[in-house]
Length: 106
Image 1 (cartoon, one colour):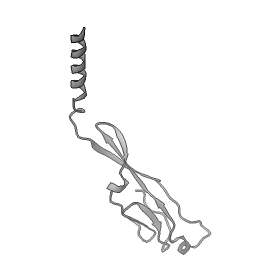
Image 2: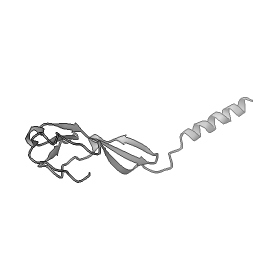
Image 3: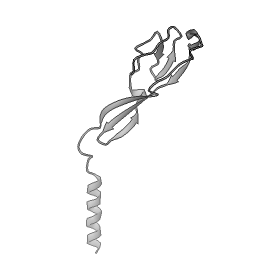
Image 4: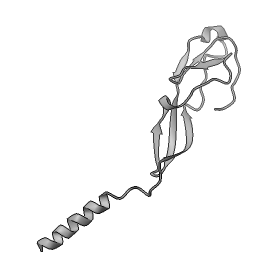
């Protein structure tokens, strides 16, 4: 009876030591939250939007094992419309107050 318990304990220890599938974790996609943001209002001059900001969050989806992580501090942030909005290295999106319009999706 004691021998069976020892065998089960050793087997349980060996199973816990096995690596997970033998694969490194892989990033398969990144999403940004919020996905859209509107600064100011139609009846307010664009110049008064200067300084309005929102914190962006980057979420990475991984496999092996499947998990979603906050990777905001690990991505490089940049604006493709700096005349309308700038984004800091930490993901803070700020209206410049220099132009109005819409920007292409991220």
